[in-house]
Length: 465
Figure (tube, rainbow, N blue to C red):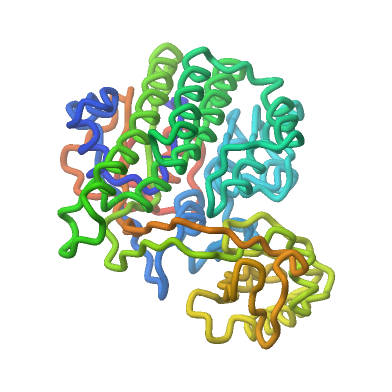
């Protein structure tokens, strides 16, 4: 008999982190799931010549086919119509709601067909379109928060940004508990009691409140929510939580003590949200599914530095400065990427050549092309606080569309192919007898749960939700 479901996409969280935080008594809902044996590991079995990347692995989970078939690597790569996402297939027969889900934008393309009760796309969306339209102001805020906190967390807001916050929250009266958590978070950062990077969790708190409100208002057959705040903390602070994973002492004891709670705090916020969602699922007869498309583990390339870094803030000005003058549309991308859509593949190829020349000799720079879309990963040489090197020339930052930031960077977590699957409020799921679940089984298992026909391209799932 078909059932309805809520899916929480917990980006990159491995069972080890869930278990560690639960054992500290800081994640009671997740601990109850562990105690009831409701978790199993996932594995993404793709043969690639580069490190797994979240927009690529979530496309693999969503479509049920590997990168070699769907071809989506970056957030705004073209989405092939022959490989629809499971929530697109579900929307043809069931009601669907999405919040912050990767690849759900542009709404006019990805969510044009089917019964989509609400769609507030991911923080790398190409525009602020949303369903219903009254949430477009919130989506503008979501996109702005992502942009302003790229590479450097910022607490202060200028008047225009304050107005954006007010407009964005106009249709989202915050719960008292969320407002109190936000106040403590901002106060702790402002007072210097906790690292300023913790302010990134504010975005999760706003999105989770929105999701809970829409669940109550719309109650779709399938609701999907994506969160990245734990993944961001793990990348920066894996060493602080698991220093024994490393054979060398990369950070001193004071740094470890100051940052050892950052991953724990992020998981604790997630646990509170999940407990609220679980209560709603019990009352409304929904299966709750927690899933990550991959995991994280200790990195073999520890990196910590305080340095000047160039971030492109005005892409049009920058492109003119480096000689990419063809007409193109600038799409959202994660810093340090620029994603550009050209009128044709030929025009994109020409721009790619110019940007590859700019990348010469820069180890972390490169260009990827997918049809008429190219994504340029830049690594600009900063000469001083005001100037950058652009190939064979030198440019003043403000005249070439670049902002030079002082970045206190840490990286000790890396992507791994082993993720997490948890299923709550289902009498059909058991982790007994399961070692690891292939992520390509997840899309067909979702469709089977909903009573929607599985696509011919899908694996026969060995897991039942």
